[in-house]
Every structure is written in C-alpha cells, then in structure tokens.
Amino acid sequence: MSEQNAQPKKGSFAKGCLIVSGVGCLVVLIGFAVLTYVGVRFVRKQYAAVMERFENQGYRKVEGQIIDVTERVTDPTLYLGQSVRIRAGSERGLAFVAQTVEISGTVQGNVYFAGQVLTINKDAELMQDVEVTAQVINNYGTIHGAIKGVYQALNEKPSEAEE
Image (cartoon, rainbow, N blue to C red):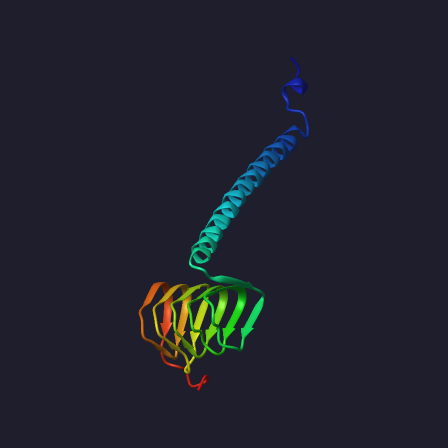
C-alpha cells in the first residue's frame, strides 16, 4: 500500500460537514413547523371557546382595527380589535378582546377584558365585576364590583400628566 491511498480525499471532510449541517437545518425547520401547527391550533381553540362563551350569553360581535363607540351601548357586545374606546357607557355587559380598551360613562353589566391595557377613565362607573386577563389596568374611575382574573399591574391614581 502506498501512502497516497491511506490519505483521505481532499474535500470529503467539507462535504460531510455540509451534509450534517443540512440535516440539522432540516430537523430545525421540521420542529419549527410542528410547533407552529400546534400553536395555531391552540390559539384557534381558545378563540373558538371565547366566541362560544359570549355567543351563548347573547352577545353580539363587533370587529375592527380601531373601534370608537360614541353612543351608549344597549346590547351585550363583544368587541374584537386592536384599540376600543367606549365613550358613553353601556346598559348591558361588555366584552373585549383587544390590545387596548378605554371606558368612559356608566356600565351596568359585567366587563370582560383580554388584552394588554384596560383604562377606566375618571368619569367611568362600572356597576358590576370586571374580569380580566391583562398586563395593566389603569383604574381612575369607580368599580362597584370586584376585579377578577390575572393582571401584572393595577394603577389606581392618575398621574399628573393625565389630569
């Protein structure tokens, strides 16, 4: 045997690294696809549960990016959007799935909120419970019921910038 035959061929190590890297990338992509599929199914299931809950209670659904309600709400309503503002209160319950919600006026029914920031303005009076899944609740008004659910921060005094 000659020494030439015992040496590895040039470039075979580089080819092996490329193949292993390609297989690794493929495994990562498949894992990402599986996690995305499972995540999307979970979100859809949660969304369907929320919709079913409020549809069974007779809530009508209003969807939009930015929703600004200037008249008093007379029906139980579920708002789906990025930003929702209720300016004149409600005679019935209100539900929100939105990033931010701002409530003014008197709300006779319960308030349900799932999102980032719920702001209850100084002129707001909530007569029943507030059920939340939120990051921040800014309560500058009056809540006669309890605040239930999960939230990270509760601000109850307006800052001087808001006065």
